[in-house]
Length: 424
Image (tube, rainbow, N blue to C red; front, side, top):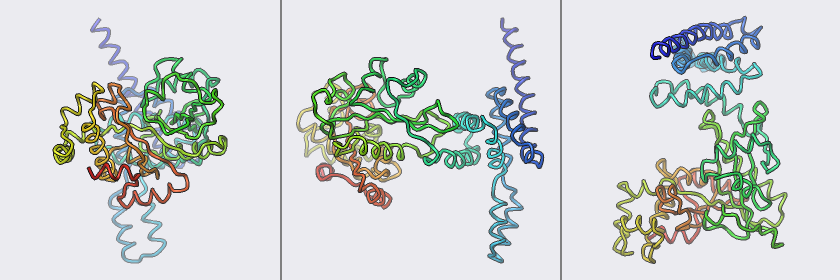
């Protein structure tokens, strides 16, 4: 059996090596004049050959792309010419010199009908390699640059996902939900009823593949607990009360190959505008968001220092906080301390490079840190990451640009009650 398996492996790697050789030749042809005149057919063949590569073959392909870097000597010559003359011609020559051939290759590969999907698949494979192969970061930067242009929100279309959507699409929503797992079809159906919405971005070249989706609850008030939100409760529409609040409670990326391509911030704003036009009773747009960095921060030097400074005032300590949060037995002084720790973490460090990633996303998107909710997520994940804490970010659509600018200056825009809590 081992011998047969070994022969099969060698045969597979042999086919991959042959495909890689042909693929490289095809890429060189795409970069040549012949590729310019007959690019679509050559690109289609390169795409076919990519599908025959093994993992090792794909890693070797990325090494090949790495070799298609700007010519150092040429760049230096053009840079010196620009430094000496500063002419428009020298600027254009320098720009042309520093433009990597691999970008040109990917642009020409995109001429094929399956080009976009293949390039996204290539990036997905590359992302999986980067931790072990950090020297490929320049290659990844070129993929990211091009994909950011091709997946510009202006080229995407927004689509509501509902219970009548194709089963294949609904299965992808279940599969890719990354914040609050969808337990079964009944759970999904509840999230798609009249007081719940799901919207996704799609690309014209990938019409059946959601790139990113957001789940929204239409409510009477800003929610305090994810448990209440995702339970099968009666719709407020059934009570004859129109919703006043749209709460974004989950946003999930479906495609690792688009990591780093900004989609979520545009998705939330576009959905908010759409809902504001369709449901006139809506007055507030907010989130119910996790704080995935809180527990880790509390265990670090900054968090320990903050907790120690608050311990005597509130009469609680971190070990007790963790145990009480897990058991749902937080006493008043412990609640005050956990609230103060969370407010300090988000309000003081939310705009820093080491701040909570979810906080940075929403604050950079122009939201305001509105409220801290203790015991809001009693799931194992929620307790492990944030001691069960969740927060509300408020999206005032008329203030998001000003809030974003304040965030870029290092300021966290937050409510008065959060500011007070952050002072301990």
